[in-house]
Image (tube, rainbow, N blue to C red):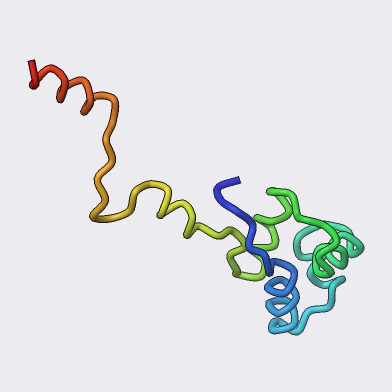
Length: 95
């Protein structure tokens, strides 16, 4: 997985499906999965696996992965992170 699944994934899927005026069966057919799977995901009883999540995102044109954690963990703009190479060169320059 590229990031964390959003907490409100079930609501996002249901809202996007309803916006397209699709039934759960229509969505299931669009992503080539069983309707019971779609219903369980929309209820929040089942977390979609990566392949199903990607099909849902594509069919409904939504994002279900929270990528905000990725940007904070990489340091973000204006933040300096030290690497092992930086430490080695710093120690060499002090001698």
